[in-house]
Length: 285
Image 1 (cartoon, one colour):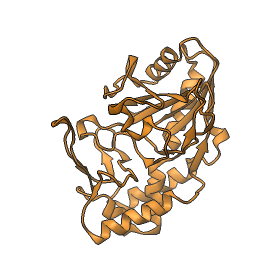
Image 2 (cartoon, helix red, strand yellow):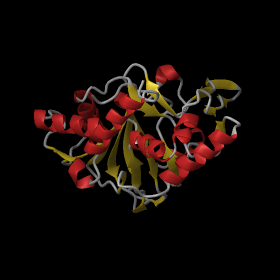
Image 3 (spheres, helix red, strand yellow):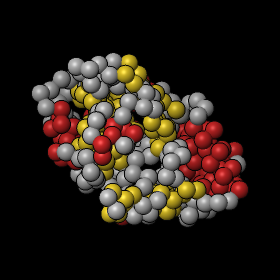
């Protein structure tokens, strides 16, 4: 296994470093027709996702963005979507400010800072999020910049710096998310697992993590406490593998569940910020 075998790790590390993108301009795919991707467009997106686990894309204005994004995602094999509480047509959630009590308690549906996390870090193993898409219909009047980094690069950089850190973060009980109850009913059971792990169905190095401090329990050990501090310090610095971009109308991100965050924003009352997000149980292959 990659995490244990030194020769396998070195081979993977060298290949990863040789191919990892460092310039955002190299990672943008112009899509001419979202309802019929060309082979060149598909190949570039999948190649970028193999190398750095993400691709940016741009489409021309259309009447129905929901249908266009569902079509793009479906053509890339993203069909097995997460039907969570606020999903609308075809597996897409509308990420915008909400004044609804049950929705507004979740940070994505507010105008606040959203710290580093992977999507679905609280999901059970059988509902593991392996990919997501994020598409901008309307940007905020101010702010709302997205930042992201390949989790595999975080593992690589941490391991090269201190092997004990990644060993601690692969502990099977490293991070737990308590159950979520609404009106006394359990909507989601407790989720416990490692931060870094090999995802067995895909054999890919993967990650589940959040910088949130509320409703997050880390295993009570000095090693894990120090490892989380190392991870947060690395996330909060700037490396060649950190990216940031303020998406405009018609721009989107396709990825294999990269670590990401969002800055706070201010809305135009007449045209509030709106992004479409799809979460999927399979990777972009």
